[in-house]
Each structure stands twice: as C-alpha cells, then as structure tokens.
Image 1 (cartoon, helix red, strand yellow):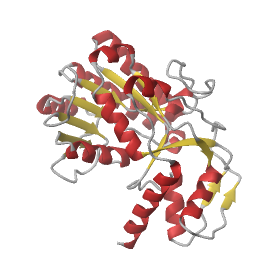
Image 2: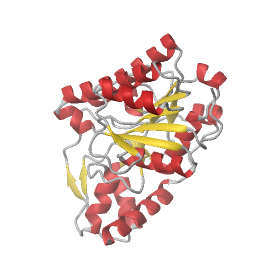
Image 3: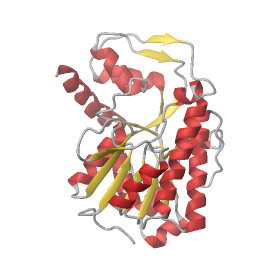
Length: 311
C-alpha cells in the first residue's frame, strides 16, 4: 500500500543512533510519524530500543510488536577500514543483519522496506555508474554491501516484498562525529589549531548533504506500487566530484583559516581513483534532485561544528 503522508505512520529505523539514522528519525518525527529507532548499544530515549540485529529472535519480536508501515535499514559496519582490518565481522554483521531484517519483514505486512546501500558496490564499473550496471566490488566492505543488495533483490522477487535499495555517495552534514571521515576530521583539526591530514589526495569523490539524503529516503518511502515493480535500485549523488585535497582546501577557506595541509603518501588500499555517479533515474522516477551545493552544505556543517565545540 502506498504511503502518501507520514502522519501517524509507524516508521522503524535501524542505525538510528548514527549520523544519518538520527537525522532520519528526527525528520519523520517532525512529520508526525510514530518512529522507533533500533540501536545496538544503550538506548538514549524512549524512541529507541536496543537490539543486536544478528539476534534474529529479538529483532522479530520488535518488528512483530511495532508493526511498521515503513522499515528503513541503515545499520551496518560502514567503514572501509573496519572491513580491511576485520573482514569476518564486517561480512557477518552486514549480511546477517540484512537477512534478519528481510525475514522479519517477510513475516509482517510492511508497505515499504528501504535497504540503504552505497555506490561503492559498483567498483570498477564504467562511468557514470548506473543502476543497471552489475556490481564489481573488491574490498570486504563494499562486497558485504553487495551481498546484502543481492539478498534484498532476491527477497523482493521471490516473496514480492516492496524493497527499495538507495545507493548513496558520501553523505556529510551536521552531527557527524566520525573522525575517520574527511569533513568532521578536517573541521575538528582546524578548530583545535592542528593541520588537517591528507592521505594520498588524488581520489575524487562525490559528496551529498544530509538534507538531500533525507528527501531521498522520504520519496522512496512514498513511491507508488506501480513504480516500485520496475524500480528498486536508485543512485543518489550530485554529479560533482572533488579530490580530497580540494575538499580540505575548501574547508580551510570557508573557515577563514591559514593552515598548511599535512600530507602523507599513504592512501587506502585498492582505492578507486574516482567515482562518477548518474542520478538521472532518481530525477525521472522520483522527482529528486540535489538542492544543496557543496559550499552551502559545508558552511552549514562548519557552523554546527563551531557551535558544538564552543559548548
């Protein structure tokens, strides 16, 4: 059944304690949905419940009790570095969690099941990345996400589940406290009077502001039944890639700092030189397009970090 308004709809979100998940929870609360977030650690409010997603029995109980209209699965081991250092944990967590979410939804009538993914699954595919390109992952992280993608598509086709798979570029914005990511890492270094560090620096990436990602999730949740049959996978990007060096230089400029960049020749193992992602399908089918420019998004993000560090 198609969702046209979030008012009084029951929305379940995994990974709601993380950067994107916490924003998504607030987004739906502001639209008067009944929202429940699943976190792995200690719950921080009555809007959260603590569940290890590899605990099938406990997850099934939560889903059966809450009976969500829409299920947004964002939780995962999301760092490339974690996959490199502990591949078993990354594969086990990302694949089993996705499988348990899909099984729980198969046994409960859920109108929309959104399984968050990444453009990293395309690997060495031709540019620009398009949704009908086969996945070509290499490292454990993106391979685990590809496995979850394929399992989700299998459940959608076999059990006629309303599954949607958004593939995002790098998402940034206020509230991201993960110091391994380029924006929070760079801003934090500059606020502490330190030189930002650049590893490698030649790889080009696309960066999407959090508000544009939230609109993408909203539109996916509201897609019509007729559209979902032909469109399960969507890319979300801006189409404007920048190098890590350019990103750091832009942040330094916007913060009004005069800082050199501490460069180290070491880059990430097996890192692709660039990404070019087509978001034409999202525009044509969903009416989505990125609204926030990189400069505008960085300004808003920097303002948040400055305020946070002053507290």
